[in-house]
Image 1 (cartoon, rainbow, N blue to C red):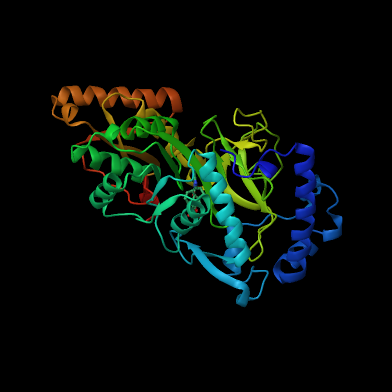
Image 2 (cartoon, rainbow, N blue to C red):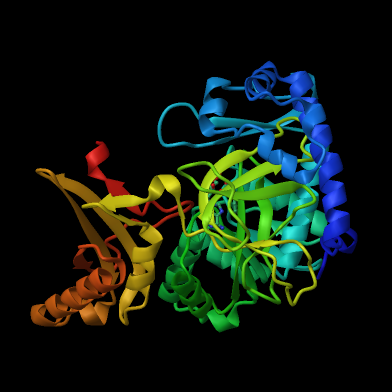
Length: 433
Ligand code: DLL
């Protein structure tokens, strides 16, 4: 179902008109309200009146996480705090979190866009939405919650954790739509199997999963284990939260970006030069309707490419390919670049290998080492040691052939790798300790 036909099916020409008007207005606003933005624009020699076409966006300076850090916590807000009705924050692994704020209207817009995203993914009024994204400072729980209510669905606000109880509720309430991270979906699937429940007997029809990278093989694994359609949803706190883009149930091939609210760009992460549609690079967003915390050309560090191919669903928004990695989670192993998701893709294609793994990066002398600890099924694990050794060797060879890196494989017994209740920690980099 298309939630907002008027905007989601606009012709490019009409959409660009809307975008330009909104862009001009947001640039004007941040220039007037935030001394830090004004200074950056002055330094770049650009004034709001220089934005006369959409491509003039190139004249504006980028915003980075470092800019947010320097203005912690509220320095980039464009409205007085009395108008900010909610804040969220990203956890961040080190130092201070990134804080974002919303006016009443921002919360409305977010609910509206999240409703769009859920409808795009195949949810509808009348659905029982099992929302297992974490509630709290993380944008996942509350973001999805208000969107599902706006859609007219019934929300079950379970948040993460307490997995067996979640499954009981899922059965008793007849949940039809599952919202959580892909790694938690696997955790749920495993528990469902352990409890002897046939997933086909559950009412789940679709899962709208995001907040972390997941490979296509992982998606297939989840679809099989939970007997549902797995849809990819993307977003980030700095830009809004979940609901920046979402796959459609009809196409399941790339995520439609809600371009009447966010202008996407792809740039070369090294040089910062813009790239064309179809080229891989770093995703950059300008928010054009947010009030409390607009961002101008925010560098997400997420790697993807855009597509302008028409889609079966009828939406005209450009699509982004699923995000397979971030510029800052790329591992460099003895000079070869590799993303955890590429290794995941290979691991998940091996029969008997379970979708639970962790990558350990270390340094021995001057050399980087990489080990993948990966679970295998009970059957395989109880095989002779020789069989296990051969399987490890085969996977090592596959990774070497496909990705050009040496990755030691350690097959471990089921339940060895810690299960995720939110975003999974796939990489432990001991070089950073
Ligand atoms: O993860 C918002 C969200 C919640 C998205 C629920 C989807 C569902 P942050 O905690 O700020 O916000 O983390 C944002 O997570 O820059 C990506 O690196 C990653 N990410 C989010 N969605 C996806 C996805 C939320 N579908 C960061 N695929 C982003 C891959 C994703 N990575």
